[in-house]
Every structure is written in structure tokens, then in C-alpha cells.
Length: 72
Image (tube, rainbow, N blue to C red; front, side, top):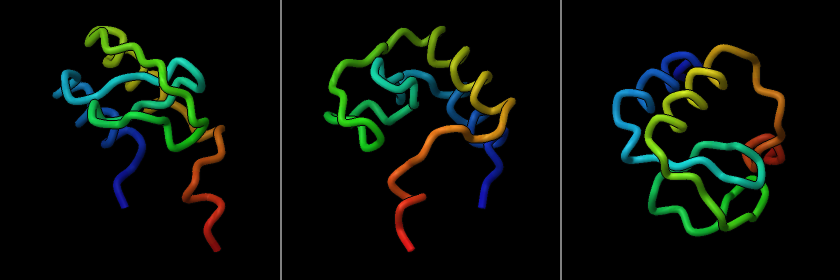
């Protein structure tokens, strides 16, 4: 399993392929219509913001609950 830091680095290398959910600040791929974490549908697609958010999320432990966390 990739570390959060490695995932953040890969996102920062191709920010045009991602966007930030304005409901929960998660980073999702651009083809996502509804956020899988909070079910919001508004996104920030600004590449500099995606890079900044990836760096922030990659530098700290996960604090949000995702759908994967709910699977036994």
C-alpha cells in the first residue's frame, strides 16, 4: 500500500487529473461526479490548489472517515 506522502507526490505531479471536493476537502479524480466521502458535487479544479492540498494531506495522518474505513 502506498503511503500518503507517495500518493500526494503522484497527485502533485499531475494536478490536472484531480480536483478538490468543496464539501470535505478530499482530492478525487476529475471524472468523479459525486464525492464518495461526503456526497458533495462542487469541486475546486485549480491546479495550484490541488498541489497545495495534496502536500497538506500528504504531510499528516488521515483524519477523515472514508468509505473504505467502513468495510469490514
